[in-house]
Length: 253
Image (cartoon, rainbow, N blue to C red; front, side, top):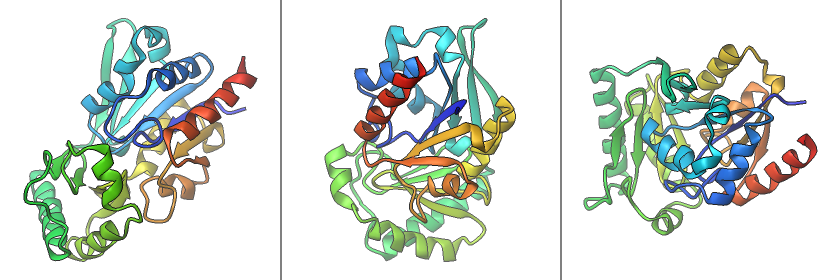
């Protein structure tokens, strides 16, 4: 019997950069009655709140949220809910230095321009400092889901960017995620770092965890979790996750 359900966010629990549907939010909240639940992503803390916590509404009771673990920026920042304070508490954080951010940013910008994939009129920031990683969003953070889906469905554009950026900054790790995203981090601070931290915090083993993700192929940001030997369900869209969770809840009650 698994003790922990862990999830990627974009395309696994929701349409990229948008809140979960009410149906998904209520189902995920119900899972917290039976399991410790973890969300892990390269996104910022406020995006976790907007896309995951706020859509739960009344279903996200303090007792349930106490079983919800937020692994922000691939797990280099860990938040959990404190019932007594009725608020989220930062347990640990491993921020980048200004020099590291500058090096990551330069590599991404140079590589995207060399491959012809730099957009002069993006919808929001293209390169974003997320404290403990740097994220590249080719069309801008606020691009529509439709535009994002159409831009690089086979990931070939991002693979070319990563190939150049990795040569420019070999001291860092570059991973493809979401629909237009490339995450850059220190070596070893990918999702393995976050899942290892989760296991330490909850005193569980990898055999106790079931993971859901959409980027489980080599080079994808969920692939390190697969390499750890954690049982993983590969999904293509959030509806696949919802279907699986209904089955899990059906045998857990």
